[in-house]
Image (cartoon, rainbow, N blue to C red; front, side):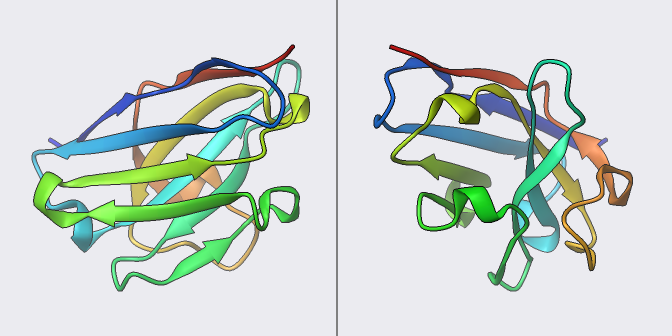
Length: 125
């Protein structure tokens, strides 16, 4: 059974940074594409960034370019989302998910079968 456990998140002031982690159990995370999604209150879930098993990345959201990065630590079987220069509009629940690829669009949740539990990120002064 593929399981993803998330950690990180919380309350941060605008301009601050947070790092989210997504740890895999039951499978090797480097054999899958890992996508980060977020969902703001009253909005649909949107794709943020995706990391291919090859190590390549796909930018799903133009709004995070230059501020968010995705990385992987194979020894820890964990993928990270580093978020810098956070803005209030980055507020939402962030999810990691495992799939077989990042897809061709801007991140379709239907392409990802296994999901983390989600973690709240709140950017506010």
